[in-house]
Length: 262
Image (cartoon, rainbow, N blue to C red):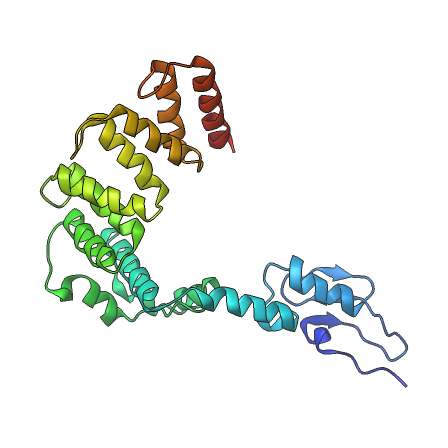
């Protein structure tokens, strides 16, 4: 009496014969062939090697892990911020908002991050011009960064600081820029820690303080920020905020080159 085949066989094409319990099989999703269909190997292929296998083809424990990974990190604030980013991207690239209604786009986002709810065209409109705002692309960026920053999104706090520093879409304000960089740095945003060091080095929005600049560059460099590593090497090379040390400078420059090469 032939054994009943398990669910893994549903995801493979096979020339099954009653007298062969291990017939040749072919994965339905990537067309990988196996001369002998062995359930354990077939399931391992779906779990770890097949790039196109849907979640329902994977083992139950792996499905649970995938669901947890994707769904754990989407809350209302993150959903709203992602909507803002998407609206910003579509608006700046002048892509019609009907983009979000394209079935292939919907399928892509569902596969990429199932827990993210792709907004409708109407919601995208609300995030941009229907919000009563009109202006240049840079000005729109400022408005979007402000909204996200108000919700505590660290990257947006930093980007808003950059807008104030360079006068992009808003009146240049070094003091406001420094305050925003400091806020993001205190929340652990590495790029902002380096930028805060830059402010102390040049006296942007605060008094010039080379020792403080060196300390901040060192903090960000220790966390592998490429710009901070280069800045730290420069400080050691020229004795800025620390004793001159060409060996240390070379070590940090080398580390920076290694990160770039990788």
